[in-house]
Length: 260
Image (cartoon, rainbow, N blue to C red; front, side, top):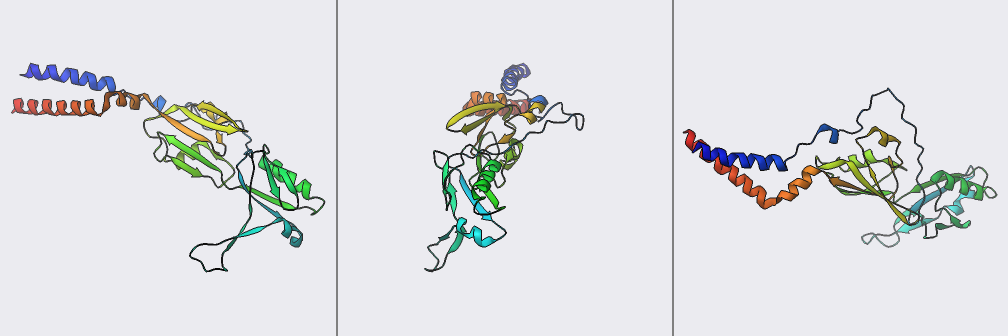
């Protein structure tokens, strides 16, 4: 009887080992072979590039604020449960059209698509120079968002309040990768001037810190592929997994019966 149990146990263990491959630390740890303070990372200069469909908030200030008033238009938003005549006043926002332009008060059509935030601010200052001396321009992208899907703990679309975000910061928003996430092959889908590009990055390598994809752009989509362990588990399927569990239970009961 013991020989029979042994014959049943061996194939079970073989199947379990075959489909349950161990994950080595080389596939889990981020930024491997990094020695703190041993080398300097090259400084990456990053500024988001303004694109069509970006929603901007632009405010103009001046030493004599009355001169800036005509350039700062306000809209009033009414809510259905608020009495007529009352509402919340907000600065008007500007949508970059498919040609990369916005229509700004008094200045007319201004092309901002393809410019960085700093370049756009300098362009406004130059246009305002004959109207307002030493104008202060504040420009923000209001719909800066990124999407994270695949093997992350909290997939979804996340709004970004600042002008830039790193891939590590984005992954932290999504609760980091699951244990089944392939850290060697994270896909980033990016659109620039109507052209989509697909890039794979490896966050286990130190060189990633110098990558042009270390900082994400607005509307980037990040997809974390499953690793081999997750793929192999899907090959087994729920029915086979349940069968193996049942077989393991039967063998355990038989072994305990013989023992006693």
